[in-house]
Image (cartoon, rainbow, N blue to C red; front, side):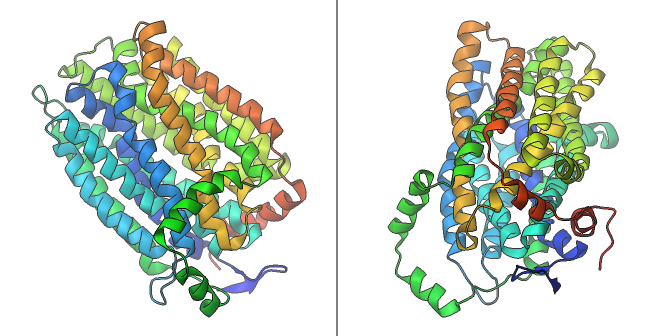
Length: 463
């Protein structure tokens, strides 16, 4: 490690160092993408009705609400001379998530699938949460936006591959995408198996290829943290919501409506496309499973767009501002979701996914870039965990009310959930205007465009 920057105790990292520390996100996104594209399909295959889907999905945000702040809090207070601070959590989460990914497609009853969703989401969160703090730990301020962009790149690449896996297994390798009533197709099963292997290998690459910085005063660090019990840690984790910095409070409103929109999309895209575009609700039919496979392709496209867009966002933010960049991206997402209502040709749905992909790239990077420069270094994981309340709370709200709204106001027609999601994206974009992002600090964080390229762009050269 080299090139210590002025005003920072952390050395600048070269392209391959940032690559290695971010590579684990490739595997993590295999887990999330398989979950997002296939869980509703699995639930419907096992007998769930449309209005039950949001409640069944409740497992995902609830586990996030419980796990993320606790893991963030304790990863701040962990240090091993051999394994570091965040990497033990990466490894444990990877092992548990891999097991869950192998078990999920073998569920034989709806209740089993719901339990597997709890296990899978909790395990993924154990790995994922410390990765956000990892950028703050390892990179100086002027490289953090590039660090988050690199994470977004791997999120996009992983999600492209994972989302398309059922379609690929069916169309490239002839694996069956239909099964008897109540059985999960082999194409979905093999997708989860491959995803589990990819998850484990990618996360362990980061574990073994990255070294972490020890605390500045190791003895003081150990003394302070040995005095705190488990119960104290739990209380402090959830109390953090009352101690948020001002910028974090403002961003929380943006996050709420952004993630409400995303959750509506993840829950209802399969149901919306199979019924609205393909004209079927029979989960055993060839047409339904063709539509469900196409959902995977749509999700692959929006994640691919996100991977490309991730490296354009720092450039746009440098020319405008981070909050305006986020506003534009969220508006693109709103237009993308609402446009699905007017489409009858499945191929044209890919155009809708372009807008969603732009929004997704920004959601994964801009809020964290704005937030990280306002947080104390010794509580980075803790506050990132607290910030994630505003990822999981809107998902809990969505899970609680979307089924009721669709059943009582829209005749259980799933496409309207996507329209609601689009409107929510617009609201999130407008709320960006209230965010006070320190422009001087933003310029420092973004740094010169050459620095961004060296640190995180695929066009940059390794030093």
